[in-house]
Image 1 (cartoon, rainbow, N blue to C red):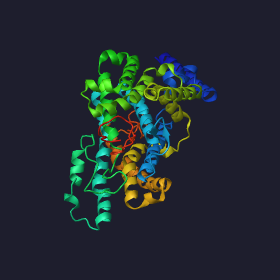
Image 2 (image 1 turned 180 degrees about the vertical axis):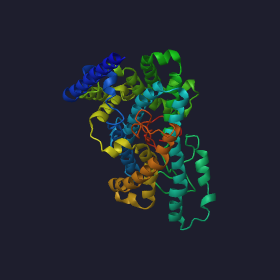
Image 3 (image 1 turned 120 degrees about the vertical axis):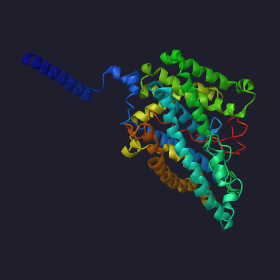
Image 4 (image 1 turned 90 degrees about the vertical axis):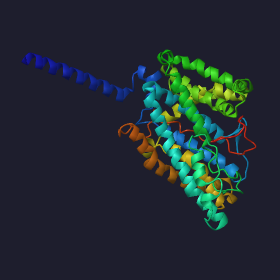
Length: 423
């Protein structure tokens, strides 16, 4: 018996010794080749040491900056391929979302997956509706009329604003007749429209990977991505199959970016996340945009996703931002913060001052939303088990985008009959 114990102790000692040597070698010489490429290279964006929260926060601020041009009466600002910077930030959000959400779906049963998705998006969205209707709008109403008399009963009423938009698909942007003279009159939150289309993409990838044949062969997501590019390249023909429904037109615009991220996840084992792949990939993406401004950005979506992942791997990131994902809150509170600055006269000082005045309010509200609403909701559905990173990169939407369109914007370039939401 004692010999057995001695043998076991010896075996344990050998294993521990080898593991120690392996870890020491990795610290000195870096990970093995198999860990540098493919899935292993993507896994270097682990929940503890990556900068994707920072990347998404920068994208959310880009949307705010782009909207400051319009809300201060200075047009659309810089354009790339006919789209303002906020639109491009939205596309990038969808790229990251497609990659991260596909990984989440493949690791999770559909019920849990859907619960996590709802918990990540909906509580913060609902809180934002309430804050705008009963926090922002009364300030504007009082500023315009000098009294709050009639605020609760003036159409569209605050309760009506909340109730009408409960289904994520934004049908009512106004509250109590406020913002009547703003550059985008009556639109308190022109960025929320994208949440509806983001969630449709969640349902699409969730349902697709519920099919056993597809789930066992995720490489099939590559031809699915190609199909979305083809559908978006000829929107009139595609729309004809849906009776010309305007919402399908906007979905066609963003879905290829989401499935471009999903396609990259499907081939992740063969793609190293390194500068010598990501940077040339971005150059090829730029070439596609210059060559085919219509479907070129869609076709290059996986390359754009790869570049964003590489940024998430190499950029330095403050520890607080790494552990706290306030980018979603920044997205949902950016536009109302900007509109409040307009109400109080901040737009008169130009685009840059308008943006600078809007950012502090946005960040404060986003931080409160994270600690009071978003993080508690996510912990609740996980049985009070915090994620390895509170931002939960594998479970968080790309931060659900930020608005490329503004309600009533005559210069909107995305084919949609009636903008119902947003980056």
